[in-house]
Image (cartoon, rainbow, N blue to C red; front, top):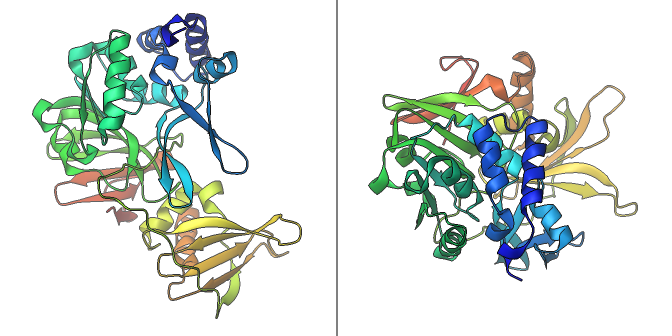
Length: 384
């Protein structure tokens, strides 16, 4: 039995109905695209991570596999060895997030769209169903991803233009584009994307300074600049990859000479307050900070959130507050890491505890800035 022989139509229709009922899509054209697209053909291989951290492949054409493929689930589709472990490097994004992004892009018939991050080709398939082959373009880093996606799309009669290239370059030979959507995260908007967008065109991009430190932003080109707002609902994508990248290992945290004090900034903002976590990176957290959890050696229960920097600086904040509503924080190494989190928390509180929709981004040839409420606000931070 081939993947095209699988009875998938009813599952795709149920998925489309569910996305509509949940409010993820409102446009009948996108609902029709979801119902008409055999996602399992575009995701012939998928992996799940077990509780022990090991990855295993599951059969996408089995009844349980098809249930997962035609659900609001992100499917990890490619792995890479990182020293002693594997990690996901490509995925098929959750269909609910895909359609929310497509609706946010405000795509109309006749638009020309560039996708950064081909992945499995599912997003490109929905775009082609709406716009036609000749108006959909997509790039991804590796031919090992792009070529199979092209073949799978062709097998269901879809022929967008797919190119293996570092996505930071965009696709200048086919520019300009009415819409650009990035299904990977970037720490700042590449200049090529701004240049390849028509005046008045829209860019939807996941701006992330670190894991969980950022969100989707919808930006419109006006002359030589882009400007717009972060989306209210939080989302995350894998970071854009580039050729010749090598994963950087952090040194062992410096734990000697720790300095203990109390803080009013709650622990684990990367989980509980991602706006503050994002602002902390804008306010001085060094590049490459990683977060984690410290466990009690006897009970194996979490006791503290931890952050570690490439210079070995380390901070851990106890999860249990004091009766006065403060938390114990211990820092070591040359950089007082928790200071940036405290400053971000102070600014966030003073500004009325804003959510993502009060934060915006401006991109010009001379620089990029994040701002609160207004591009000329006193709360304005350089990006990148």
